[in-house]
Length: 441
Ligand SMILES: Nc1nc2c(ncn2[C@@H]2O[C@H](COP(=O)(O)OP(=O)(O)OP(=O)(O)O)[C@@H](O)[C@H]2O)c(=O)[nH]1
Ligand SMILES: [Mg+2]
Image (cartoon, rainbow, N blue to C red; front, side, top):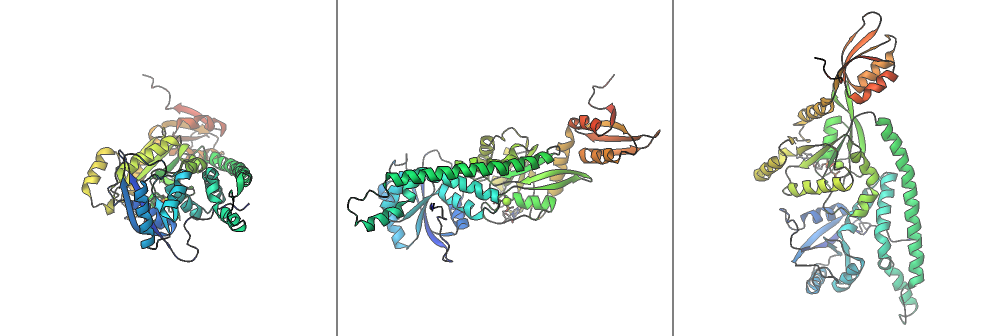
């Protein structure tokens, strides 16, 4: 089957596309402090299109047929011709019929925000899992729009039959296509399940270790922070959605004490829900983390809205209940001190960092260390001095304070999370003083 899932932004001729951005300002929507449609322009840039013009219309409600008013849409069409632009990018999600109607009125190609974001994900997905997740999202998005996707067939039929009584590709053709797409969706889901099972095994292998996940709005500096904290060699770019896969690295939070730290895909306002659901597996890292490190770009004028978006998205993916600390990153770039003050009011516990310059990094490490060890207990363990495995396990699980060898046993003072106590017995250790027991006075 040849379904049109090719990138909507066509850079194949080695050229960048020329786009006109269009938005409708509805009452009650948060207004950005950046220039109008700035984020859409960043998205377009990442996808390979240059912004030639931006047109915003204020409306009480969207027009059911064309979302924006028809008169305004005609104006967009005139601008498209004047500037010799390639396409119109709409800052909202359009229903399949709205997209069709707009293309007619404008007289050119129209894509919506979801298509643009899907397009970026298609281009950037590199691992098998990310590619399958993106294709699944694309297929689910395409299913109700098949008629539109197959308009090129329409045209072929039109020429063959000289346009008389042509009913397009015919309901039968569309039904066949739908079936094929549904089958592809099923296949993708199945192979994702297999990949997911493999991942679960990997995650389980790590399960006994403390895991923290970096989460946040796209471009906040999560990957830069991962690199600053763990030395991981990850992709960092001043582009939206540089990271589409989860990377997990060991992170030494104090000498000899390691936890795992994961970098995750960034969030954005109105993240297409097909993407959220197909990326759930990747986002699982955040759902099952012991701690979330929410990274915000303190220099972004829209940072307060971005925090809301991240909070909402975390809630939607089922990570709303995971404990969270906040990092106000990119402080080296802050110029607007008012926004920073508001941000500090909103997140008084937030730690200021510059992942780029390396400031605040050790304070962040200390804070995470404190969190990890906060609910630890001091216990004394005894075991056979020949049991080397016991000692190395204790070093992995907790913080070994002292090791002595009285009366032909090894005795270890260790600070450790209570959940390890049962495992210690399995590893051949005896808990002889248990800090979890209530003090005996
Ligand atoms: N000035 C400054 N720039 C930073 C800082 N942290 C990150 N950056 C820059 O911000 C851009 C985005 O950084 P990334 O680490 O890729 O951001 P991310 O949150 O991983 O973004 P996505 O993966 O796209 O969601 C890059 O150009 C970084 O160099 C910082 O503390 N200060
Ligand atoms: Mg990243």
